[in-house]
Amino acid sequence: VQLQASGGGLVQSGGSLRLSCSAPGGSFSRDFMAWHRQAPGKQREFVATITSSGSVNYADSVKGRFTISRDNAKNTLYLQMNSLKPEDTAIYYCNSPRYGWGRGTLVTVSS
Image (cartoon, rainbow, N blue to C red; front, side, top):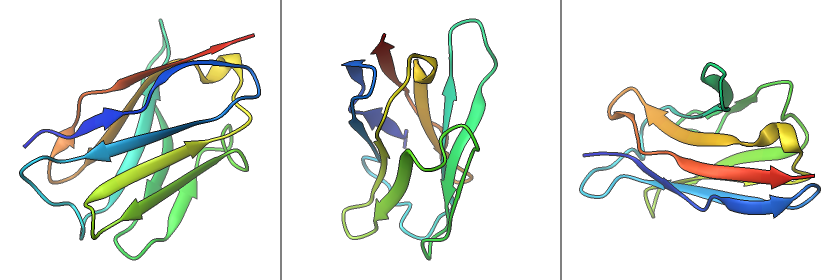
């Protein structure tokens, strides 16, 4: 089972995107889940986490702009990104202890 992120794209500064993450053939409804990102030429960094019960945590750089959520019935993880900035440009990955790192989705924010 491989986690698959989707929903990335090109957006202008100040815009919004919603990323999704699924696990075709698997289930992470009871798992701790996370979003990370990797910008060009930089190391992968933490963005947000969510527990199976819905407790969340955010990196300071995205706090107040991004919202992580999950729909356990649909076995889907989300990342709502608002007020996007050019420095948010990166490949975004979802991951879990059970399934590891999934295929990322590219987010590009133009100034």
